[in-house]
Length: 141
Image 1: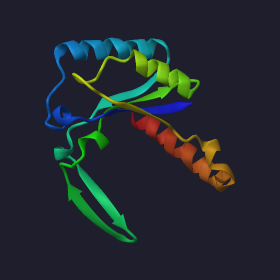
Image 2: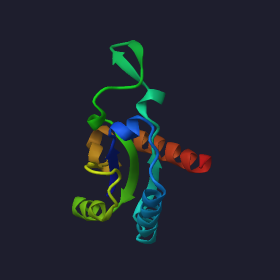
Image 3: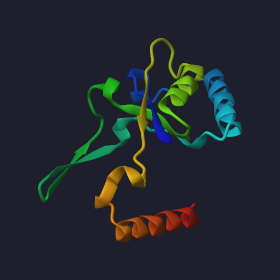
Image 4: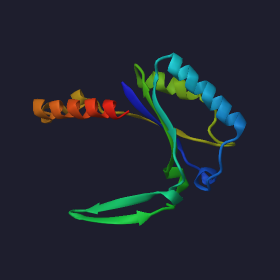
């Protein structure tokens, strides 16, 4: 099972405040543990939403909304992609994580859909297409 583990943004991350050397070292150590355990697939921090944009869809129309965005508690400051056996294992790993910010922080865990989750609608042709895309992505890394 794959899980997206998201660090929720706060006022400091949205203001572009960089983590301390201590926190960077603690996160580096935690990420090394994840790698040694065969859990970590990807990990990245995200720039503040002031450097981002959203594209809103309304039927065939598209509109661009430039950041920053309100409600920092609903925004993402960074993420991991983990391969673990269960939600419970993902939760146990998050409990071991250093606090990403001084004071209160929140980390959200969401399971990633796998091909089998889509059922019959994900036809053999669509599965083949997905495999080709993933193969090309691996080449692009």
